[in-house]
Image 1 (cartoon, rainbow, N blue to C red):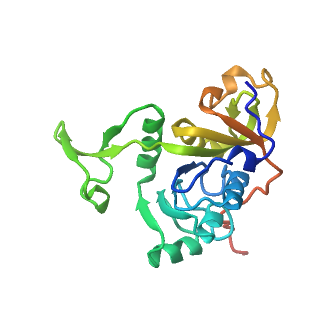
Image 2: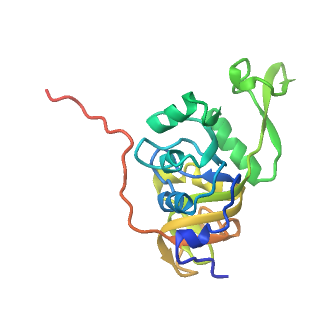
Length: 232
């Protein structure tokens, strides 16, 4: 089955108000910029976005925050983004902060059909408020729910028309879990190839998890924060 779409807007045309979007990437590495731009253009409102971070003031999910299309963010890191800060402090954006490892496992569990799991992370902190705590082998564990979404938006280095994906370096961090946990997974790829061109042993996300694929335009390789030594 050829899962390729001509444009990002065509691949996301059925995103509706109030849906949950799982958005891949780590910092500014591996974020699906073209798909995020298409969501902004299409204009659905009251979205719940699940992403490791909210981008920066200039790139990533900030474009949906600026247009006030996002009602709630579930993230682990929300620095580097003045728009996010303003919306959160003004009460216009609901925020659920989740420890990074817990967020990754919640997504992996959701993609694997596991509704909940127990972790010691967050016990005795505000993260545990309103959640069930059980003791196993003398240690307290917090119950966390798996996460699934209506759409997963991911970025891959290469993909074929059957939806098989290969990520490059750090972009492999959250994208594979997002792809598994979406009811409809849409992948933007830097290079779209024909079936059989990707080595089977090198595929990171099998096509069974991907419903739609788009070849994206050339994107700038952004650096979230550049730190250099002072001159001697």
